[in-house]
Image (cartoon, rainbow, N blue to C red):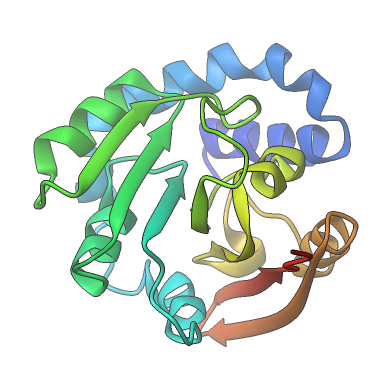
Length: 204
């Protein structure tokens, strides 16, 4: 791993255990992503990078109408989501201004909306999204649970499994989501990639 990738790994390990410490790492990590924004998709142009998240999304029985791509980066997942579900409104959120600018530049649909946002304190209403998707992204579980609608789903993927710089073991993801009213878990494996799909209970 490069120095930047090691920093992302260390940040992930610490922040998942103690989310309040995110503020100590946010500035440096954000600047790193800003520096990479213009070449992000070129650097990560492997056709397999979306395989794991796509495998989880394929398991959804009903197309969501409102989707959040959390940690959207250059918007690759958001664009794929807009193509997959022509009726859905897609919101891509990222803490990096450079990444948001790049995602907006590459947008392929008027249904894609890109928002500068910190995943630890999202500017969205409770239950705003029927699907929340994260691809190679640090999960802030309290906020993920808050913005996912009852009966909605969360898809979390790591394109290179444990070799992904930002990586949380899926058994840890499952435990964290289980404690926040999620169930109906399904795990997926595609090459090195790993992903998980979870449904939020609808108690209405």
